[in-house]
Length: 385
Image 1 (cartoon, rainbow, N blue to C red):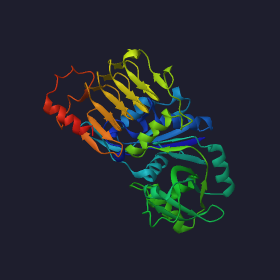
Image 2 (cartoon, helix red, strand yellow):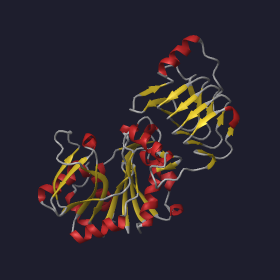
Image 3 (cartoon, helix red, strand yellow):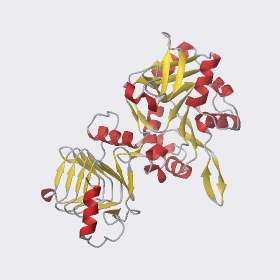
Image 4 (cartoon, one colour):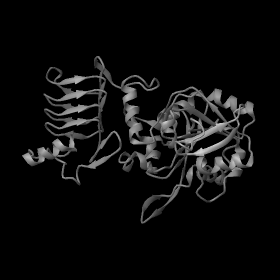
């Protein structure tokens, strides 16, 4: 059975992470989100998978390759060109990417599934496909009910009693939204859907293809299903995903490593004197990370591999990516640290290098900076408020 994973987007709402990591490779406790999708597809018999790539395409292809080690077959459709020796992504939109694959050589010859590459899901795909076929649909959206105050981030679906879509609103305002059933980015299509997509141009599934299906009266359906769906389309979403895993609220993701103390998990060879630090779970600490005496870590928090947490530093309700060094006395509460960037849980970002704060947060592979002066301490205090 065949499927497609949409992986060509730039992930602008998840910056700064997506400056160097494409959205499908964003790690959920060290495991890329797209890897979870491959596991789900394989469990339900979808073992031939096309992936459209554009932004940081080589990173995705290098990690997943042909899919052998994940028990599936994968091929890639690159959207872009080479300029002065560098790959430049030029995404065709979610529907345009679909059309490009089919125009290259007809691949989609039976019912197939399309998934966005930036969500954790545990959907019963077999049950969803059965429902789709029973309806005789050309396209089916898997929907989920959400609180009305978040509907403006999604496509909103209105159906009749049989599940046939009467209205599709792409990211309406809260006041304009006619429903709280939203598009989860999980689709079931028949090959004939390609005929509705114009060739050789950018074309979007939610913004253009779906409204066209409604307008033309195509057999276009939605089914609202009860399943775990964790969208990581924005930095706050990613934040909640990590918290959800650590707090055991997200059931289909295991915390990696070894539970060395209740609620405290570590990777290999973590250097820490447990009697001289204050660590309260749930916390994950990646392998080859060093925690100096006097440090405090309060969960839910994740500290990636190869980090260095200095004496007197505090990490609370925060996510620290690999190779991060937190200076002495630094206090990070509700922060995400990624390379040279410090991000709060709303997505507001500080470039610590540009702000001359790289003595505060830096790369653990660099030589430790000199002790900072009183003026720098004042800046640090302001940052940590």
